[in-house]
Length: 335
Image 1: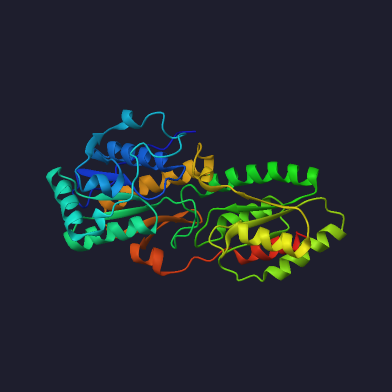
Image 2: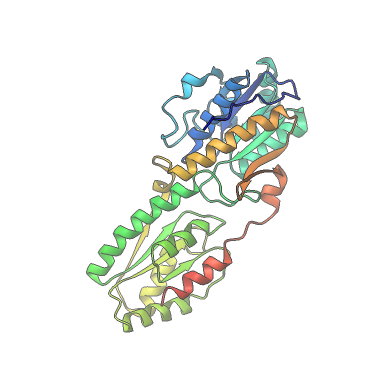
């Protein structure tokens, strides 16, 4: 079978150089996205400036040319080779003006921002105030951005959390304890819900659902009556009171030995799983082509098997709900 020959993409915008940065919390797969940006640009004859330390580095002028060899052996690495940081200065007009000037001084025709909604706010302001074309790539483990089925890092975060839950279940069953496990998700319960179903949890708390703690206490009591020697309750960090509050209420309401485990930032680290590497590679390529097409002010995302563009402001203005069918499934399977 003859392999298809890659064809060049028409550079309608006439861009010769793009910049890329990672911003906000790191997510497994960010390096795969950077790699895809750099190598797609190289294939199309464009140069890439890597911005270190996100918007913080941009307003200080921390830009450097990076090529295909600079991103070799990075697709499997967690974190971000460009580093990331929060920036109070970028929230000021003066900070954004400084960053825009650094981009112009380096001949950059468009900026690709890999991050979450906070990062996209910063990107949109840069475009609105200084006319710099910007494209967002969704890189956040919470999977809470509207306009894409999944965000880069989400799949790995779920697998990392699930591995911990499996280990804690062994301990819980051995000691006949209840384990209340907190996973990341300040405003969204996607991680918590997937981990609860895959980990066989008896109950799950998510920010999208105001669940009475009394219902969970009864579920735990019923589980004991059915002969279960240990129970797992998953809590998203954004739930009021968090896992500690849920654990304290369960122990007080049942008298059963309850332990709380907060997984925390361990979910952000580690090598990205294949799904995150593939997603990041496709979105990195799509971001370069969006700039070459003269597109700006959008996030590239994946819906089904298709790449779609969503205006940056919609990624945080519109709500992305959890999978309600999966939520119902979790409750049925906990009996």
